[in-house]
Length: 73
Image (cartoon, rainbow, N blue to C red; front, side, top):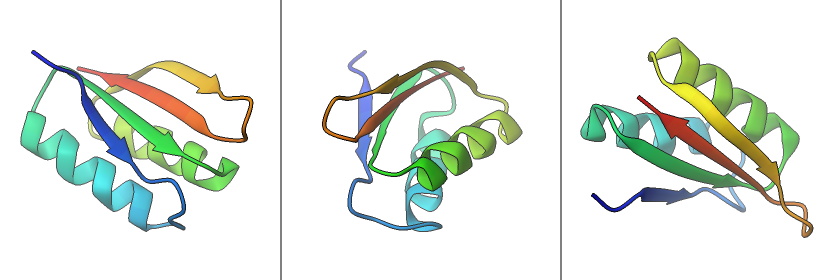
């Protein structure tokens, strides 16, 4: 199964959380990558994922100021 990627760069909260939440609900389980470009979105998406029973298995800071969160359930 291909990894689902949610590109929420350029969006401010709560939009990244809502987009990631929709994809988590659709997928039900598996692996999901969420791309964000600010600390608040990174923290909020991570908290929302944990609240939905997902694990943040990787939280990688990119050199260009973006973050890639890998969620797994």
